[in-house]
Image 1 (cartoon, helix red, strand yellow):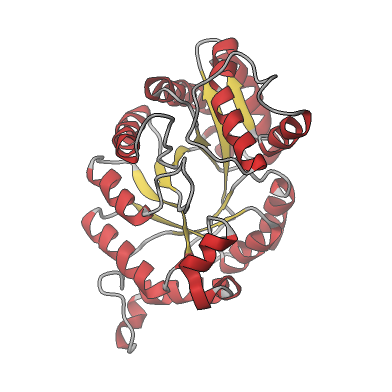
Image 2 (spheres, rainbow, N blue to C red):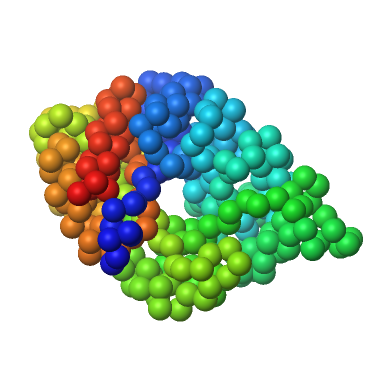
Amino acid sequence: MSNNQQHNIPYSVLDLATIVEDKTAADSFKNSLDLAQQTEAFGYKRFWLAEHHNMVSVASSATVVLIGYIAGGTKTIRVGSGGIMLPNHAALIVAEQFGTLESIYPGRIDLGLGRAPGTDQTTAMAIRGANMNASFNFPQDVQMLQNLFSSDNKNSKVRAIPGEGLDIPIWILGSSPDSAMLAAAMGLPYAFASHFAPTYFKQAITLYRENFKSSKHLQQPYVMACVNIVAAETDSEANRLATSVMQLFKGIISGQRKPLPPPVDSMDNIWSVQEEAAARQMLTYSFFGSAEKIKKDLKHFIEATGINEIMATTHVYDHQARVNSYRIFSQVMKYINAS
């Protein structure tokens, strides 16, 4: 890894507009905007929102609407999708929506695209209906989006107005080698969901780099990894705050999803041995602790993977503690980039 890569790693935010216990989606949206404003001041590059459906702890289902809300309340931070689940939508509609966003907030909108439904199969059926096999058309749909954004499309019978001729960066999101190969073949930046799907992370980014073909969008491969971060003044306080995300993942594994719960002193009586093992595997790329601990662990992670950018997602029950975690993490990244 070159010194240029090592010392200039942007850091970004993935937000799910998490609904916490005893609060509402409206509370989550206010907190998301406040977090975006604070992280903008902390030097974060992007603030991405993820499309999920039928999840009681996630309020970012109408992702495009939220992107507009966040972009409207900030000034410089890039705002985008991490991601839009493209098979849930017609490419033309996505092009028009993001063309509208880019027209209102020029130079600040990112379009991250995923193939998964962002939900369970029953809900996916409710969304996609007769288009349940739309995921097989994902590569063609990404290409269609590129065509719709191209100024060369002006003579086509189907045009994205607004959208046509606008420079909206497209990212491929993924959690498997398939998405890595697509991003490589299309010469697009690649964002990996290592915050919940760590299994294929190293294999996928290796395949992406080895098979990357430069394009007019990108000359060299560009990898962003999303990781779980919970930072606090002390290791013990961070570990206590992190019990909220541990409970969240326990609910995912057991099928008993709930809003994000408050932290607890011990997880011992909350999860079984099997649930703990499964949750900790999903949380492989998680950094919980004080600034000093995260500096050490994160530096090793960056050196081992050679990532170009890091995206932090932080599930913390108390909003101010969550903001503080992002503040500490920004200081860690500034230290790493300066060292």
